Length: 553
Ligand code: TEU
Ligand code: CA
Image (tube, rainbow, N blue to C red; front, top):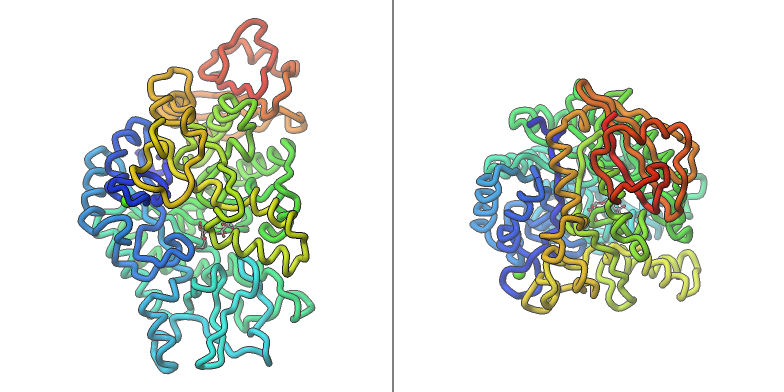
């Protein structure tokens, strides 16, 4: 099977399955669920970080790339996990977090100890300007992108939490260390990597201020993202590691534009094989993505369609390739974000499934979406994610919002909401753990859970199984061309997929409105109906809330 045809499932280990009752998901827990994943039709598991980490950013701050976080198990458990995955004909990609390490990493500790240490140059240390940091760059999570070190009176770059220290990709010795790490895991038998913020590894030479006022913190944007040298480094990585190991390389990076993704993923460029984009998730997020939360995600179907269609069309025309996802551990649950998790939970979860599994690109699922898990809205005091806690401060202190508004915003956007524990059954804690879970379990686990949906032919889970198996039997859905229809329609998302053998039509009502299908579709509605989220009854031309249909035409 070609890697582009694979169905990928993201496991965020902390919340997936706890085998020993300490309240934290772990590798043995994952092993116990592999049959479930196999039955779902998964080919590739993307495992969010399981390396040693002080967990300031839940594993995305790595203190040792060669060790498994004991909370998740041992290296033996990991090897067994790989073996069990392989035994079921699946594969694993690890998360490669190579833009930064934890400040607890031995390289960083040595860099702090000794100004002359060669490890100093593994990171980005700079002198400040007077009593200000070296420049006005803002970090992704708000506040300055620089952290002060009193001993040497200098700053080091931290683009995410202040405990995640940006690596200096200019340093060839550092790059070799990253390739060594990659090789270590590839030798163990992992199939490749999901590369965390890989588009941020190169920073503008000279580290210039952004904008005209050096006193105002601003997001550096193109000064740290998708730079020409990012491609140079990835090409080197390709030669050194990716190519010799025929590695699956999935790029992640905020604010990668269509033209960037084409450059990262077009095959002849010899860089990555696919990339995620954030444009759907940034709808209603404010311009810069992160720091104008005040729009509270307000989005319209037309905007959604514009973004979706334009990515599909450009990737096809320019030879780029995306990993398609509607949620992950950084974003809200899709049925809450783009569907209606109250009145039309079942229908809208299925509609979004049908969407993601009929697009051009490689589909990614995030644990729990296959049963329609919803955002679990956590209250102040329950938030654990650094981004949320920091945003709460930044919104009040820097943006001068009143507390109630800051609270309302964080409550809606915090990543904690999609990191609650997996809902396996109706027993305590949703069957996730026999102990006290490290975070909340959504109280709706009593009805929304795997066991409840396993044997029901009309459940969301069954629909996912059907869709996945259909997609895998019909590679035209992966490779075929994308043709948008009814672009101006306010509720419907309609497109054709045309492959060498087969042609398909997808019609999705992304609203709770009942509508009559436009005349252009009348003829098509009598073609061969394949899959949908309602029983089709006469008259076929009436469309129900969140109705989604797949036809062969
Ligand atoms: O995410 C990169 C990223 O862009 C996020 O900061 C994203 O914008 C934000 O989470 C949306 O709320 C990756 C990881 O997926 C994320 O979990 C890490 O926190 C981040 O990198 C730093 O490693
Ligand atoms: Ca555990």
